[in-house]
Image (tube, rainbow, N blue to C red):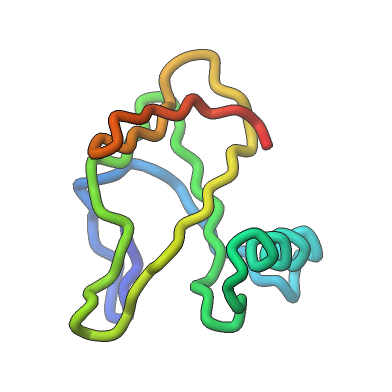
Length: 107
């Protein structure tokens, strides 16, 4: 399910569990968000809330574009991913327009 402003809805493009840890509750989130800002040279004040997403066995996120509607002014100009665990098989993140497949490696 994806929680929108009004109600949760079923998302047919992905199967995962997620949470948005609040920096006030987790110093590791604060450090990670600072590092993301340093790496991208973007101001973390304009960043979206960080998400921790778990794709279990058989989980997937089908092809999509990681962006918002440019006409509305909500533009996602960067996405940063880090893997929290190694995966024995599968689990690749595929960038099909670039012909690139990234195998998950912890860190």
